[in-house]
Image (cartoon, rainbow, N blue to C red):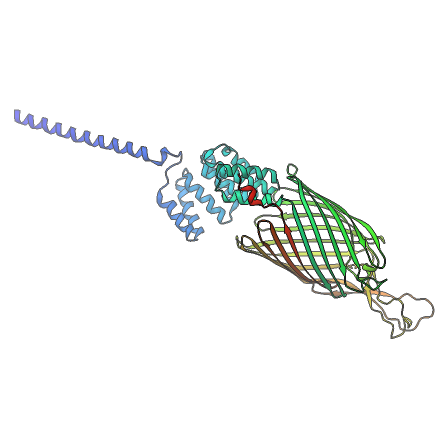
Length: 540
């Protein structure tokens, strides 16, 4: 009896010791897990490694859609997993589902308002899609966070830069570089701003020829500086010399000299660009004459990458042989509504009224849209469509030889006509296909090629009717019109090359076939900035 009791007591004691040991090991293990669990570092639920790792692997392989499907399934099961939700929102953005990405980012920040990574990613997307105000709001809580000060300041600087606020952008980039001197993006953009706002000298040379025939070349020089960070002043002089014989009085080459001063200002708070210019034109050779020129533009940047612009200009008309002999000054007013989306969408619709000294007016309207097809850092392709219409109050189509040795009814009488002293369209309408290619083979080089081809175009073409018999006394040669189809097109190419920190050059060429003539133009511009941008920003 005693032995049995003793065995029973011993067994009981052994069982209790084993149970206690298991409890102690469980408590210690749980404590270690709590200490090293991600939940103690972040308020978010720990992400099962397989879901995020698999999604990242799929994205790295380029299978973005599969990554999105995997993350959607995971987030549906674990809605509080902020890391996976952020990754899904970013993936949705890569798939160009901006609305879906926005919804996910908003929901994630609602659950995890202190998640810095989500806030930065969201602001990056908003910045790249030019929802600037919302991006600034999302970044505001991080302005005084030392750990991300450089990135936040760099993003705010980029937003200000794209808005045209060079002063505000410069301040933000300086903050970013003080926090992180190795921030290459902030330094690059600060260099660009300081280059843009540095004094400059420009030299141009251009040649032109067309089938009227009319040939000319010009040389010009420009100097400019910034009186304030958002206000520039410039002065320009150009000399345009036409081919020998262009002066009808002396038979020599007509030389036209133009001088102009310009003031440009960007009102960042009003999101407005203002430009005013005025100058003079001087015609030399047989019949010297002078006149004044002027132009002004007001552009208002609207929401969602839209802008509205009003423009007025007084300038010489120099597009016909007759306009070289008879000075013609035109007054132009135009209204434009346009789209300039950083994602590659570009568009414009405009109305123009061009009035001439003889109380004639040429009216024109056009609309075009370019859509991005290929868009990367190295290359961009855009295609689009354009419609244009032009008309005039009255025609300036006249006999090329108004005085002839034979009477109008004679078969030898020439009824050939020309536009003099300027071209007047008559119900011209065109529908055109557009294309543009931009290549950036290096950080210092940009190549652009673009053009248009009218797949449908027509206008009323004037002509003079031949008289059936020789009239007696004075007579007016009857003028009629016929509807004619034609195929205008334009091709342009340019190369921009930064030669050094101070100098850059741009070469360009263009050939166009219009309803009036075919013309070719080519030119070169060299820009020199006495103060290199990099040497000033490296001192930060």
